[in-house]
Image (cartoon, rainbow, N blue to C red; front, side, top):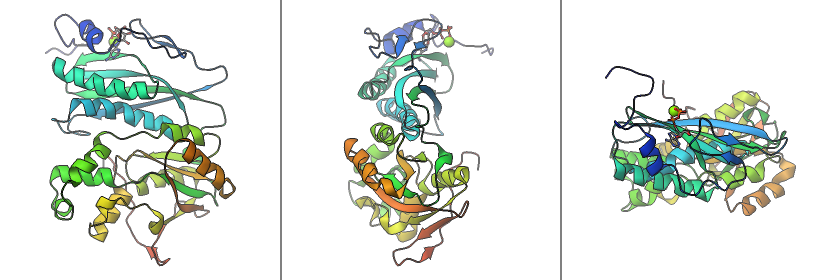
Length: 336
Ligand code: ADP
Ligand code: MG
């Protein structure tokens, strides 16, 4: 095929495909969407004085998901990882665009994909407002738009020495699910029957903490969503904020399916497991009550797992006896 700017997916062009799978009969009733799919641009109207929050995340076959991944789960996850970025900024979703490269037109695949995508979009009142469709190796790229009030963003560089460190939910299960799917011996040998069917959801259908993120806007200091592993993502906050942290291993919630793993593998899942999409954030110790109120209001469990220290870039892991534990701190890096 001669390279061209936008090779069509079918001989008739992509319009039919867009109409069948992505353009819904009822246009989005969300107030922020002045114009959705169908024109040269979508038109969004943020609240007067609001800041626009924008983020893109791409899922590539063979890199982020297996070639035989269930399309409905892919539709969910492609949007979930983007909603998670808005959550980690404390933003409220306005809408998203979808850039799609497809090797072929497979209507059954597209129907399931859009079902998963729209179920999550509707749950968060976050409509699809546009995109691009082309032929190529399977690649899903979503750009999401949100808004927040000036001064309320949960920036990575806003952690302060003395802050408490918090984690929503629990981490590690998505990593164990991935190892079970791969058939990794240490994972299969130490997991009970039914572990994969329990954990698979955590890997394939993460629940972005959007309500918690919004409840923390203007209250928490720094936040990040845990996509590449707790230790690595905490490292991003520490570097940006030029602070250190104590992480209390005993305070980390231990998901039941991780309890039977050898200790080193358990910590590998807890500290370096990716794909959890929980929120890691800091807040002033004087705001403990308000943080717990935000957790209750958003129906999201939140645990205090440590504190921020003045020692720039230094992450200290504290064991159950108060001793310092050495664990290499690395997150997932696609180019490492
Ligand atoms: P243009 O040539 O102006 O870029 P396109 O032909 O690519 O327009 O798309 C036509 C309309 O369909 C646009 O409004 C675009 O945003 C929308 N669109 C294209 N692909 C998708 C998609 N995968 N999901 C949602 N909307 C899409
Ligand atoms: Mg286009």
